[in-house]
Length: 370
Image (cartoon, rainbow, N blue to C red):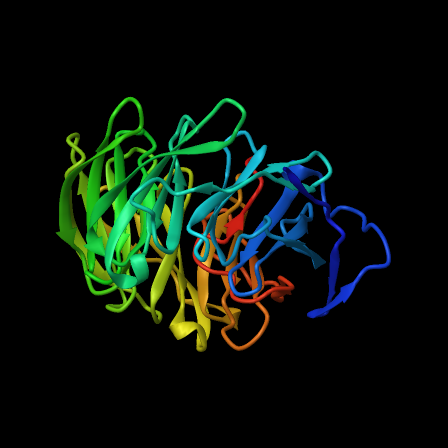
C-alpha cells in the first residue's frame, strides 16, 4: 500500500517541533523544492527555494516511508519527478514521487539485492537514469555496491550486490559517460573502479590507494578525471581515468580545513567545493579548489559555514548558489547557503536554516534539477 506524505504533518518553527492543527501550505512546487534527509530523526525536511537561491524558513518536516529508519543518502531523478533515499537502518531504498505541489508520495522500499547490503551510505544514478547504485558501508567492514534497475514507472528493483574490494565504502559515483563507477572506501583509504556494462552491471577493475579515510569521489564532466577527499588525511587526491575505467593517482594536495568529505563540482568541471566535517562537533568550513587537466590548487580561503560538521554539499543547477548540510552532532541539523560570484568564489554565507531534524549526513541535500 502506498503511503502518502502530505507536507503538513509536522511544522518546525525556530527549531521547535509542534503538531499542526490542520493541513499546511506546501513548501513549494515539487520541482522547486529542496529536500534534506535527517539521519537521526527519520525525517525529510522540505524547503522553499527563493528566487535569490536562499532557503525559506521554516522547513516542513516529513516522516520517512513506513518502517524506514536512518535515511542517509538521497538523489533526485534526472527528470526531477522522483526522490530516491537510501536507508542506513533498514538496508533499502525508498522511492518518493515528487508531486506538483511539493508533497512526497512514498512507495514501498526496495530491499537491497542479495547478499543483503549493510548500512547503505552513498547513492548515485547512471546518466540515463535507468540504473541506481548504493555504496554500502558494512559497518566499516568489507564494503559492497548494490545495483538497482529503475523501471519505466520510476521505481527501483534490486539486481545484484557485489564486493567493493575495499572496507567501509561510503560513497559511489558514476562517470557522465556512463562507463565507470567509483567507490570511496573510507576504512581502507582507497578507491575502487568498476566498468559498467550496457545493462548497468558492474565488473571490478582495480582498487587504488588515495589516502587515509577516503570518503567521497566525484568525477569530472568529461569523465577523464576524479577527485577523492581523504577525510582523515586532510587531503584531496586527483585521479586520471583511463578509457578502460582504470584510475591512476596524479597528485594529492593538502586541504586547508579539517576532515574534507562531500564534493560539489561545477558543470564545467573547473572548480570543486568541499564540505569539511571537523568531527561533527567543530566548526564546519567550505574549501574551494580550481580544477585543471593537470591537477588541483586551492582557490581562496576556507569559509565558515556557521554550523558544525559540514558534510553534504550541493551546487544549484544555474551555478549561482552553493548549499551544505551541517551535521551539528549535539543539536538540530541545518543548511547554509552561499551566493557564488561570477568567478566561482564563495560569497558571504547566509544564516543557517534549521532542518527540523537531527544529523543530516553525506549526500543528504537534493536540489531542483532545473
